[in-house]
Length: 157
Image 1 (cartoon, rainbow, N blue to C red):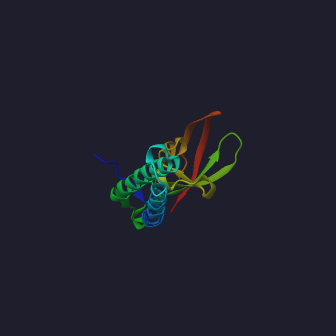
Image 2 (cartoon, helix red, strand yellow):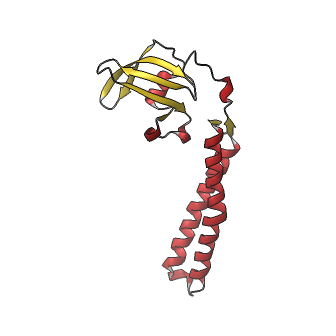
Image 3 (tube, one colour):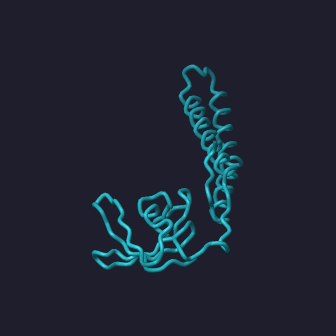
């Protein structure tokens, strides 16, 4: 059974745009490269042809994977998100109990995670620790540097 992934409307739109780019731009480009390499003669010793066929195989695998992800994607209704506990698309403000620094993260699906923009995956160590927790809860996260303790300061959407 295929794994269902939850996305924001924006995240699903990005995936569909990537699929369109791969099928309408990249696929014809590789087909052209294969045709040009084939026109050069003997295919048994044609490195360009082999490279183009390998690139085609990788591209088709990527397209297939994206199609599978999109077909199993579900859009999250942001209006039904509760702020009583941390869940996907919650904006969670946490405080490191040791150094007192606060951080704010949006919990998102694995494919939408982007630490630079403050989006962390719900299946990441911090995401897993925060899911289902309430304001005031203290969580412990196993990080490469050791265990880090956080307190949930605020949950919003």
